Amino acid sequence: MQKEIQTSLASLNLKSIRYFESIGSTNDEALAWAAQGTEDLSLVLADEQTSGRGRAGRKWASPRGDSISLSLILRPRAGEADSPSLFTGLAALALVDALKQRRLTAQIKWPNDVLLNQKKCAGILVESVWSGDALDAVVIGVGVNVLAGSVPHESELLFPATSLESELGHAPNRSDLLRDVLSALLKWRPLMNQQPFIQAWEAALAFKGQMVRVWRDNETPLEGIVMGLAPDGNLRLLSNDKIVTVHFGEIHLRPAL
Image (cartoon, rainbow, N blue to C red):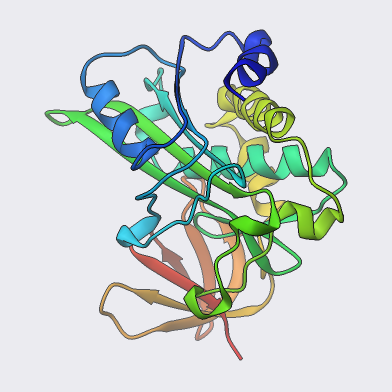
């Protein structure tokens, strides 16, 4: 698998790649590597994660051979550190593009999940390394349910889930998918502070025009209609006849029944 991946990614000019047959968390490895000063576009990959996690420390299942688990280290370029939340959209758009190449229409459940047929197929966890008040590095963690075995039992799910294999009716090649996700991410990166980036993100938003319920930390749930995104990637809702901006953080978004 490692040799196949290296061949597949050769054209992307990544700086360094660390590959693990099994690891606790690719994001933990990448955060430590970033703190040691590794270059922009350094990548951590694993065939299995034993302690994979999503937002708020929730467990992310990554069985051996069934999924994609990657963490990409980016050193913010000019302007990129002004809106760190855009890095989540960057990964989400890359996934949407890569799945579109496989004739799958994906949607982005704000802020960090990717859906197929209203079921979660991928999750994104963006974490940062700071030097004082300056953003020194961003780690973009991506987990994709590729084969059916990567989907946890229904009793373990907070939101319905699926795999690419289930949606396609056949098993896609993981190395090719990995290449296409990273290629799309590199394509979108120079556009992160431009209107076409937000427009593309908005176009892929799940539940746009629909009533949703949003939980923010310990606050009372907020209900509103999804209107779109602010220029910094925050969510805009129409709630009680007023536009409300929901900022990135510990957010749970669900369609309102």
